[in-house]
Length: 249
Image (cartoon, rainbow, N blue to C red):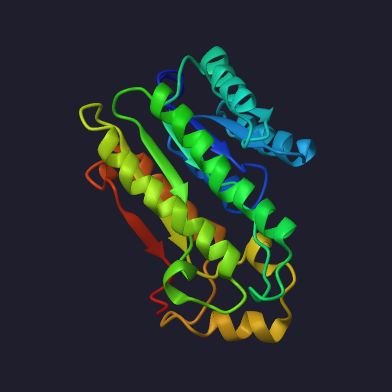
């Protein structure tokens, strides 16, 4: 990437940018010339490592801690992007939380924690993005293909992501006239910690065999979809839920 293009490039905020799909997205957007704000909740070391990798590749990045369910902290996250890089063009809200249990057995505290991260945080970030994004920008939220697949034990997680999809489609229409796109990416089973944690090898193998492509998705697969939606080439895609799942039905 030419240094001049780096200096004049666009700016992205990636929440959940310290690991998994978020971290892969940080690297992918850097490759496209973005300066990146790596948003993270608690793991400072991983987030700063992600920012250092960008710098080592000749790019620009800064790690910023924020509880994205809290509006003051999200406002500060966006303000840091303004201070460090001059504005915000793309927001990728990759932070997420999953807890699996049958509805009859799910503790309400766990359900509330899932909703706080997946629903409240998405709304808080999306609201700030709607107020802040520059013309020609993009907001990418995260849903899940499980919304349509209706897997048992995924009730709280799927319900939370159904709200994300509804908000995404409404916001795309509310931003009419500003040349800003709003889309959701809905991964299928993906080899990242959020999916793999708590699953035995048999379960992982069974889910990996379900798509016609007969494998799990990778964080790289999903980051490519995000990069397309963030790029000028993907700007005609607006108000959509992109199910990036290898054809699983």
